[in-house]
Length: 138
Image (cartoon, rainbow, N blue to C red; front, side, top):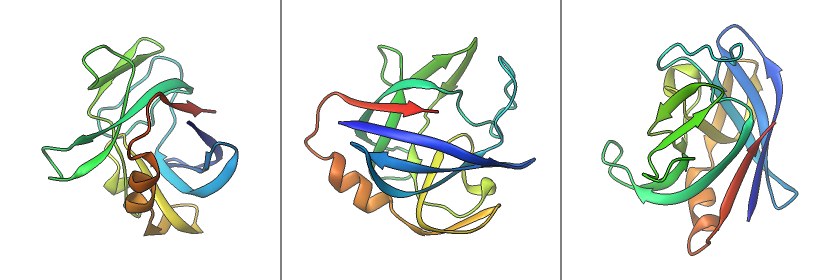
């Protein structure tokens, strides 16, 4: 299964885009600000463009099964362009204040700083019992 995140709008605090599953539009996305190569502000930086692995796992923070994005063998960390992110999930939320580096998914884009109508449950359902899930971030 291929998830493709196409980023299309950038502001000082947010990165907006669209998530496709196997080539079909699935939902809108919102992330923290995209930054220059190798620059990370903890809790306020979108993951770099690239290719990642995705799996479902139980979040100790959120107390539910959620998609986890990773590149490392420990299946908790992703490294790309000289920086490391840990515990990056795909979940519901509305603004960059809900992300802390994660990718938020929703039905609607309200404006350049807000999305609405979580699609986390629907995404988790689509990923259940799938192996070899790849996320491509453009």
